[in-house]
Image (cartoon, rainbow, N blue to C red):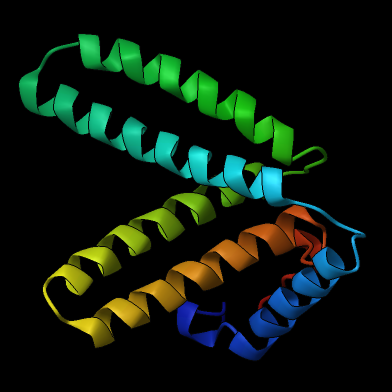
Length: 149
């Protein structure tokens, strides 16, 4: 049986984040520029989504033309972070960033409503996905090591 989202070992995610933070502190790894770029990529993914829905709702193909341009930009920028990838790493990385961004947005909406507990839960989930992205990109998590139980 494959693991479900709820089966993700959060202790391992926290260890991954700690390892990443320690590498940054030791100056063995300075990803601040790549972190900024990853946030920009998250926003480009969001723009792609908005352009898709605008095109679908209005039946105006100009949105799809712009979507294609944004997608090419996003792909080019993602190549700056993901140097070596095999198989599904590229796609998984994109989806981890996209889901992380959406959960941040969702949490922010709940924060605005004064529902801080739900917001905090969404922010934690978003950060965990973002950490998984970096673990995958940095090679700390390898797709071949992910096994079904």
